Structure formats: structure tokens, C-alpha cells
Length: 345
Image (cartoon, rainbow, N blue to C red; front, side, top):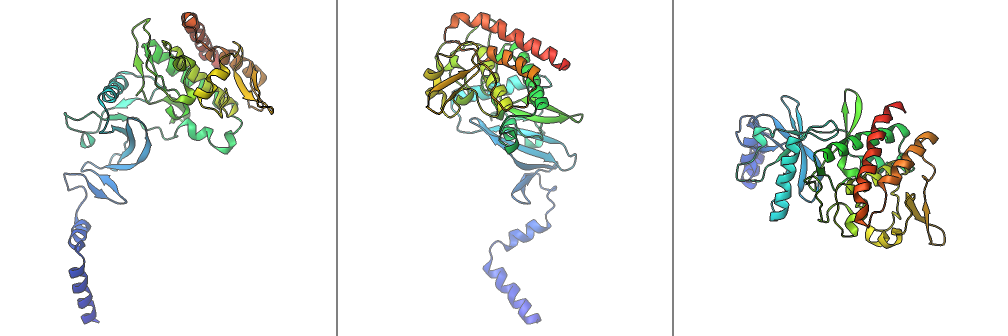
């Protein structure tokens, strides 16, 4: 028996070139190595206890990873930009970091200091550390089977109030988000209450008072007509996107021919009336416009009337830019009244 054991050990040692490394790794204290090293199932652990847990999401600029400190139990979402970004996108990335660091609002994901062990050198593009929102994003909620006909009344109202507050705050600081969509609305729990927060200011733009923008950005399914019409625009683009998200929360579907891309439905929906808030194909493949919410949905009659009034303003079609200044005032007033009166519902 002893001879067989000795022979097996000698054979395995000669045949396996990785045995010395495995032996070293098995006795090495992971906290004693000053450099980051492999730990567990492909995770990373630093000397101060920070562990890379999982990927939270990725976008055009980079990837967001969740890190947890196994000593202090602190968690942080760390966004790292891609190395192959061109000069323009590098500028947008730096702008996102700068904007996030100076904004502070309960309905915006807050920036945090990057833990020193996870930092980068001064000659590299900066990282963006943010609070971790454990509830995932709104897209996950909308995609669940029980949300096929919209969300519950209480949830819709909470989303409307939280997102309206965030949009109002950004616009008050002359910033337009330009990429409002369910994927950029995340869920957190604060004092046992659900809070919805905006994330991803990668396409945000700072405007001087009265200034206009012309760049085409955003997610096509939620993009405003001003962008598709290739006219100058301002913060009104956020209102259309917000209205589209709200409609989807109420009904489970987007408002205008959701089976088509915006480029396909643009000319079809161009003639919609000012009170129309949705359009769908009938059985004869003709487009039918509606000025009320489709059923079923979970809103009571009183709330349906209030949301219809709001959606009619948020989803106004504005190919003529002469209407924009009046539209800004009208939409903004409704958002303010909606937010303030919500506590009475």
C-alpha cells in the first residue's frame, strides 16, 4: 500500500506541471498578497477584502460590476469604461463621471468614492463608483409575466412620482438625460420603502439656459419625435421618453405601434391628434388612434383621468419647433402639479 501511494505521488508530480502552483495557492493567505489574485470561482479579492461579485450590466461605454468588502460588508457598483472608446465617447465618459459626482438627489443613483484598492492610475480614464441598488431595474419588473397588463396602481404612482422628481431635478440643473428607459430606472430599498432611481448619465447633456441640442442619442424605442425629425431640441425629449415609460408601466406595452421600430412608425404616427396617447393596428391592418388608456389596467377611474391628462402633454408630437417653449412650460407645470398632488391620492 505504501509503495503504491509513493509511486502515485511521484507519477502525478512528474506529469502535472501545475502541481507546484496549486500547492502554493492552497497555503497562501489571500489577504497577505499585496496584488489582486484569483480567488474562489473566478472572483477577485484584494488585500483590503474587496471581492468582485458579479456583473450588474453593460452598455455602450462599459461594464458595471458589483464589489463587496468581505470585512466591512460594504457594497459598491463600479462602472469601468471600455478601453477602445474613441475620443468623443471618452469625453462623454468623463462628463458622466463629473456630472454624477456633483449631483445629489434621492431619486438619482449617488456617486461614491472609488475604494483605493480598486482604483486606477492617474493616466487612466476614471472609474465611476455608485451606490448599489439591490432591486434590479424596471425592465426586469416589466418583463415578468404578472406585469403583462401593466403594474399595480400603487407601483405606477410611485414610479411616476420618483422619476418625475429626478427629471425635474436634472432639468433644474440644466441637464437633459436623453436616454430615459426602463433599463435606466433601478430599484432600491430605503428604510423598508421602495425607491426608484435614475442611472446612466452617459448621454446626458448640460445646457445653458435657453440653449438647444442637435445630437442624435438615446434608445430608439423611447426616443422623442424631435430627434427623429432631426430638429433642434431641448429638455422636451425627456418628457416624451418619460411618457412612453409611464404608458408601458400602466398597460404593459409601449404606446405607438410597439411592434415597429421608430423609423418605421414615424410617418404613420405623424398625423396623430393632440389628445391621442396611443396607436395600434386593427384586424384590417389599419392604424387606430386612441385618446384613452387601453384596458385592462390596474388604475382606478380617478387615476386614469389624471394619467391621461399627463400623457397627453408628455406625448405631444412637436415636429414644429415654434411650439417648444410653450410645450416646456405646459409639460413642466403638469409634472410639478402631478408630483405635489400625488400625496392626496
